[in-house]
Length: 473
Image 1 (tube, rainbow, N blue to C red):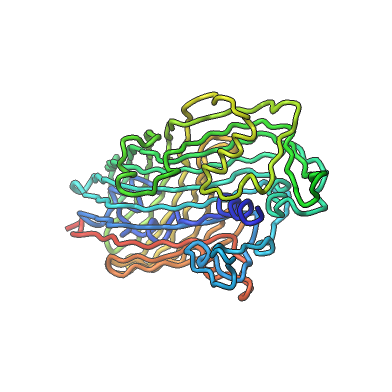
Image 2: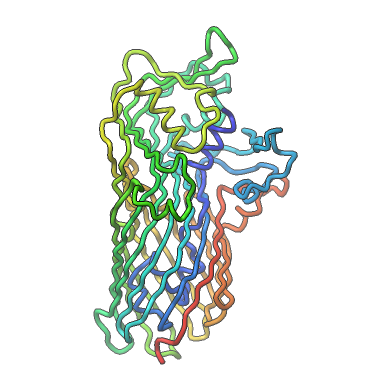
């Protein structure tokens, strides 16, 4: 139970793992379709007549609860390359409690794991004043949001900390979501006004969504205590005596892998729509003068409706519900864990609904960009989570970033520095021709107990994308 509950929590609640922002690409003028996820109006400012994103992949983890200090790096952990001396006889990683260090500051705890693949996408300039694009994207996200420290500390200790026994803990909150879905986006951007090197651009993207997997637990209030089994002192329970929560899940991916037949399956349980809208002001007199851009956008408006089971709990009865480690043995995936929780709480009752809604990670995006004619520039990006804490939705972690860069047609260099989830990160990215490679958290890739670096997440991305033909020719 020690490894399953806390490592599951660490991965579902303590990380950003796939770089959803990719600031090295999205702040570059040569970012093409990758810029549109920050502000769709930037399609009309593309320097290329035609831009093709072949594939771009990204992984991100962030949290404000624990710092990682295992003897192996986070990168080794998530890529399955942990050294043999840190594994059990079965080949699984022996993840000890002291491999993480808590941050106990009284604040609600958040964490995100984000995996994203941006598939074949293209952008075409339709003259000097407009452009359109077709984009494809696959996202897999797991989050915990607004969790109480006391509940996370109990799970981190695997319920084995004797000092916690018998002490009631009240009004614990937690919102947890997982979602796996794909989208096809259609973007149009055009020039609303133009005068003497100044112009105002507008862009909008409509997204068609197909969902494969979703679970959520929206816990509005939980009272519990940790107790020993009087008949077996080695048997520890988490005893729940009050709960106000909503739980929902799908089962489509339980016995399936993400193969092409799964991705295009007509029986996928989720369907939905999304919209991005944005404005960008550009002040650029000619190619020999500096360029200033100011942008505002609202992205990922909308969500998916899933066919699945949803339960609402306001009264669990007079008898408390008990969970222990054996309840979670030999489970595979978050869906199975959610079902165990549901079976314990519901005791065979029918669901309140056979469908549920999962919102997209809506965010308000503010950008300011200044670039000199020689290629040196600096970008300020502020992405603000626009969802409420208790929303049945994914959240884009709020980030404020400054990215100095050098941008030329065949070479780009950037050094993104960001404030995310209560901590500072720094990374770097490089593009040579069509190839991109970058990170927004360099120390997160390297940190472990041996080198004294204790990261709170990691971030990495890479891709192949390029533009053809100059738009101003």
